[in-house]
Length: 332
Image (cartoon, rainbow, N blue to C red; front, side, top):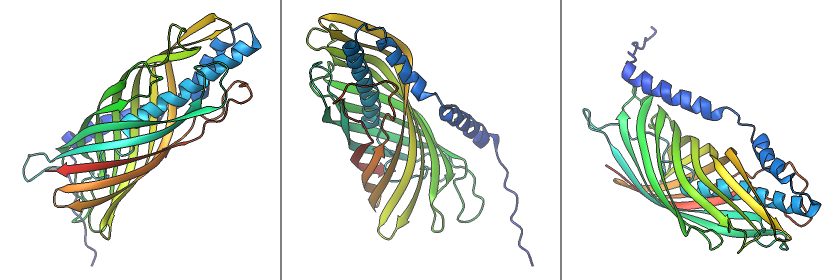
């Protein structure tokens, strides 16, 4: 005798927000031709009249596209809700659950030396991010079977991060804020992992590296930046630990100025709407006690790839950047 599963009604209150979030994710996944975006920088450098000047200008442009996405990673980290891929859902009735996370994340950055035009090679430095994030259940989603729930559930996400900056930056710190949503595809159960998609908008504000007046340094870049972050994650409890794995896409964009001074002749350029894309991967390992969870995160963010210009000898190469973090999460 075959058992039939009764049809589950799909309320519009669940479908409409889920459809809007999926449409936003589809827009983010649309390629932005990142190589062409970087070519817009090198095209500006082509106006410098000397070979030496063009090479140095290109080195400044490479540093720009190397550093800006790393700042975004220091602010955002990997998993937008540390230690889990499940939505937090609702309590009995219509009362939402709330999760609050305090975290620290660090990104290892490597960029070409360019503040002094005679310098060669790359300069490593560290960007730490101190964050506070929250998630709140909006929709419980659908339960299709006793252990299959949270389908098309929805959480609201918000957060703020402080990133102290090294001395070569004009700003002593970058303060960012973020808002977004997490769409649950499955909520974790005894038999199934939690699976979700998250999308966040983050305002990074102004970032200045070097001296825009080209007095204290031979080169600089400056921009007012924002970032869209897409994350897909899956989580499951394995023995005593909660393990989450995920992949992500970060798109940093904004109006950018950069410049260089060769033989005391300043060249300054502007590129409106510059976009840089980076992919990332991460793994969270958490330990839960009642309503508290301690989480360690490890991950990587891809590098800028092939640069569309011939760089001076000794510039060095920019690869993927590792990052790691610790978080404490409270769920009530």
